[in-house]
Image (cartoon, rainbow, N blue to C red; front, side):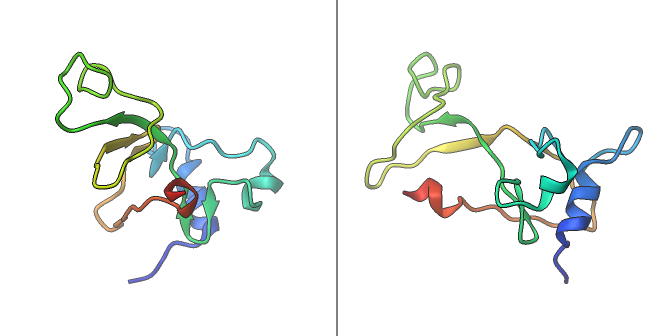
Amino acid sequence: MSLLRDEELIAAITVQAPAVPYVENVALPADPAERYSKDSPVQASSIDLRIGNIYLPGEKEADLGGAQNPKYDHSLRTGETAVVTTMETLHLPNNVAGFGFPPSRVSF
């Protein structure tokens, strides 16, 4: 097993059609020189994904946080859980695996 280098990740998410990028909707800096900066979503063999919709288990579909009415911002209380989608869409090939966890800034 090996990790993809930053250069490989950027190449895999900026491919042109008909190829399919590993991740769609990544907000890379417009300036190619900034793609390796601290503000880039590509960091240390990883891609920082953005939080999309937030769903709260147990909420009725019409309630805020329910299946038909997701939240876009929420602070978890002790013991509370949420299902979170990302703004990005993943298309990983069979020979590439990924795992996700929230960045520390989200935990605060």
